[in-house]
Image (tube, rainbow, N blue to C red; front, side, top):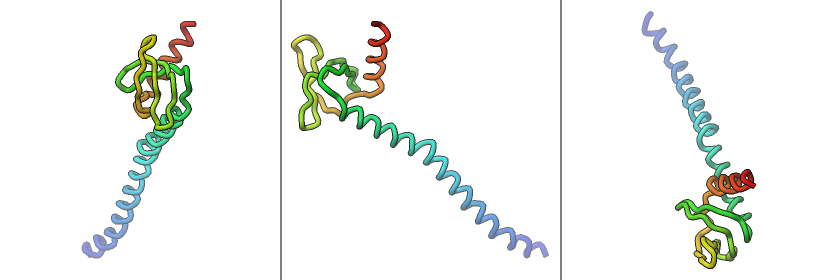
Length: 108
């Protein structure tokens, strides 16, 4: 008798494991993968929309003002009066640049 009840419970346990696995995949997607991809899209749009005169901060912490947007996905930035460096657009930190611009707007 006991063996037959164990055999009947086994298929249900397999289905429950699949449901749990599916639930875990959904949680990972909605809490980790999706927000990260949205953040990457925002950063890419931010880097594409850069124009001359924008104040930026690189991921290395270098502050500057965009002087020229080049066709090869690079920027020429002025780090001090008359001093220019060429950097990749991907080296711009969207978060730090936003904080810099918000701080400048509130101090005016």
